[in-house]
Image 1 (spheres, helix red, strand yellow):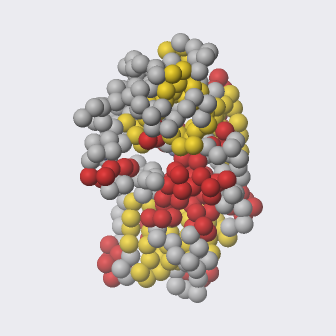
Image 2: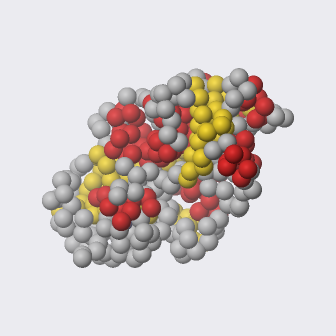
Length: 371
Ligand SMILES: [Zn+2]
Ligand SMILES: [Zn+2]
């Protein structure tokens, strides 16, 4: 079995656009909470990989955690590290095999993080987000998590992790296709059916796009729970019913609005213990909670209700197949990536961009970096 070389080892360029420089600008995180923009070598694409000029990359909650050092030894495995995994750009060089697989210089692409092994049983079954060779050198990489990310002027990706960006979509929109694919994955995992009442906990980018994805799947009603006033206003402006989760009894409020029954599905997009408990408490009997937020600590679960009311709680990791599926939905404005994009910054301004992202009063949802 041949394995692609790591993105940081030199491969042979099958073909390259003229003018690809030897060095690039990149956001380098030196240690938790210390980063700078550095001049570093442009990586060379290995087998079945492409080199892309990054045009837009959006800040994800995971990036903020990673810069803070919240996942020590895992994301990233070590510092220094270049984050960024929600991006779009142009293919400027092809590694061996990429041309044969249909890729050309000049292709506009949107990237995603998982470049899985493709041969383990989970990959064979199409669940490459659960690759059994996760993080094994030479078999699996997750860009911006355990392999160099896209917060740079250039990035190398395996062809499994790039998707054609339709002409109708801008680079800024392309940088939000990855989170849109995750939102669709959450709604798919939630098993939203036509007419369902769906609650969303957390009106960040994933929450708002998951609301759209629930509607795509036929939800009759989407209720967004959020505690940040700016985000409540955003959810309302997007036409969602909202509940201020700072209210004394949010569960009672949701039950009152659903004839005392609760909601059919909750898409848990906040990732804090209290919202996970809230999500389970507002489910209708037989309801399902699909959780994509990742709490940094354990959560006490009301197991009696899960058993006696046949509740379901399922996890959602990244996306698996939804990048291609979500592209036309984004193009048609059914997953409203432009509406969740609030700020644009240059790569040199990353510190200001991240501070804006982390400031709950800034109104920031999706922040686009243009390297
Ligand atoms: Zn992300
Ligand atoms: Zn695999």
